[in-house]
Image: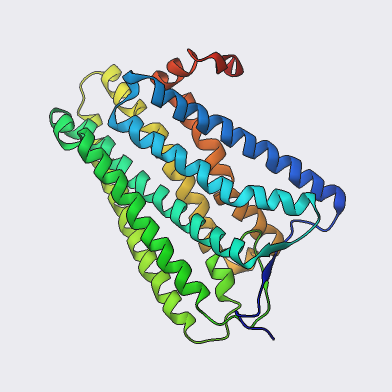
Amino acid sequence: MSNSSSITQFLLLAFTDTRELQLLHFWLFLGIYLAALLGNSLIITTITCDHHLHTPMYFFLLNLSLLDLGSISTIVPKSMANSFWDTKAISYGGCVAQVFLYVFLITAEYSLLTIMSYDRYVAICKPLHYGTLLDSRACVHMAAAAWGSCFLYALLHTANTFSLPLCQGNAVHQFFCEIPQILKLSCSHSYLREAGLLVVSCLVAFGCFVFIVVSYVQIFRAVLRIPSEEGRHKALSTCLPHLTVVSLFLSTDIFTHLKPHSISSPTLDLVVSVLYTVVPPAVNPLIYSLRNQELRATLCQLPQCTWFH
């Protein structure tokens, strides 16, 4: 038995114990990571350099790419290093940092996706007020509120989680440090305090989900009232990338946490956790670049455009 004061490292769950498959995992994650770095960096560079893209929609997209870069960089490099060096260890401080950064970045991303749904609602349902409701100051304030509130939220969760006495060993049944898995190591009833915070978090997340759904119901109603087919197509084309990213984000996360226990297994849990932590940051730039003609046209003006032909 050990307590939190004596724990100097945690042991993460490995994808496999076979050396050849560990190296395969390393190269697979390296490819996904490089794709995420390239895609998100291109979007950030394009939006920053092209003044025509200095609009609220692309400002929020730039923030989304920054969050995607941060979230995948928090998890994937350590997992790659463990597979390459055939180890499962992560230091206590490294685990704390991973929990804080992941919670901060993933909640900020969800907050930003909620804000982006409001941006699309105003653009389509209240186009005459778009410049007033979403001027540069309002956009900066909304983005700052998302980043700031989620920073404090992650700080609270991390401090609360690692203040609990941990006496159930140091093996985390996940390939990265995750709060629910660390709570399983606690031997104190005070873990209910953190569980209560998670319940409140779920309620807030559900509120954001309802906001997104209501926004898109209003958007689709407004689109159906547009007389021309070309106008309806143009309006929908500005929403589809965001709607696709939201669907990917929510579907993988919901399936992970609400899947039936009857189909649960360590291998399936690992695969599903990859789907909601690693895949979205790599796929999101592709979704936006393929579905957004203006962004795609600007990307093809860059020297790197040869990669897209």
